[in-house]
Length: 475
Image: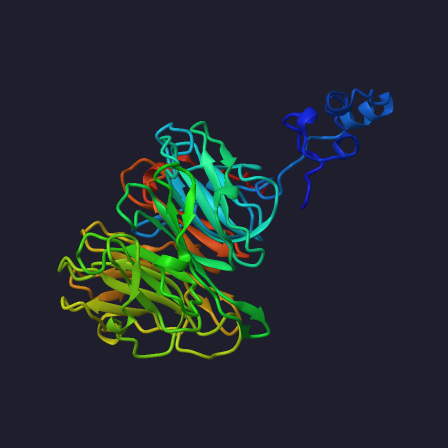
């Protein structure tokens, strides 16, 4: 764990660290804050230290200091508002995000899962400017891959669940309605090497349930068997869970990277579509009581895939749900499998036909994630597709694929997206952050700056400081 020596303790008497006094003294020495040291320890700072602190200028943020922010050209759908609306963290591994109103002020805030870091809360000012709230989810680092939200304990406040891979410590936090969270992770009945995550009411009792997709990566390209997890909300004790993994899920070597809950057969019950890095992707049908049976034979899988994320949408307006799989060629190794994004169309008879070649742009980049969003406002779902060049793990611009309303997509990236929106795009959150009624998008980044696309272009431009005129040298 890394400590900020200049961070002011919220309550020094209740600090979690046994070495609170030593840390406070170190902070006083490094930051030159006499008041800080006196409050934390009761000690008196020597006069020479006070004089030294008074003579030093305030710290200046190199990310914004001594230059003008020249606005970038927007796309037709969004403006890239990353600077200055998102905390600068280019080395952060922001793997996923969800938008919820944490403090009931009417604005959506952003909760971020972080790989090899502490999960984050970015509070929204109502116009799409996000502020980092330290320690909202504790101070311990985890290997979190995804985050989802629901009111698990029925108290009227949104809660969040994170799924972790390497350290296998899934986390559950209950919202307090005031912008804070209470750690309830002990209520999760089991743990695993988790990757996929989906939340929904699978047994019809009105409580949100949790599905966790598990993998068995053992290093060196080796794999051990993995078992998915299903936690049913306890109707007698909302906010507690019953482990139904062994009784309600098919028993197999699951190897699940992504998961989505959706009614795939039109019976009103949430089914599961699973994405796998090493096994064929799967379809699990719900009997209405939360018990799932494997119906994967309904999926036409025409090519081997290493799938990282799956989404469900009605691409052609026929009222039936179709499936899109986002794929990679390898996990940042050499060229192995075809990373082409795949589209499976519901034929109305319970089967899903691969119509990728006729409906999607062809590509060779790898896509760890994407999002379904109607970016041109015509009522048809379009696709944002994350793009990374592998081999090389080269950051690229995400792709914008526009739907013609009949399920045929064309690449409109250059017109739709700002040119500055480049990175190792990871999972994306969406919702209205700037209050214009349209979806904005937070694009996670794996070791590159997470990016924010806002739809109210005029509002964002008006919020930026004017570029100052420079004085010409006299001739």
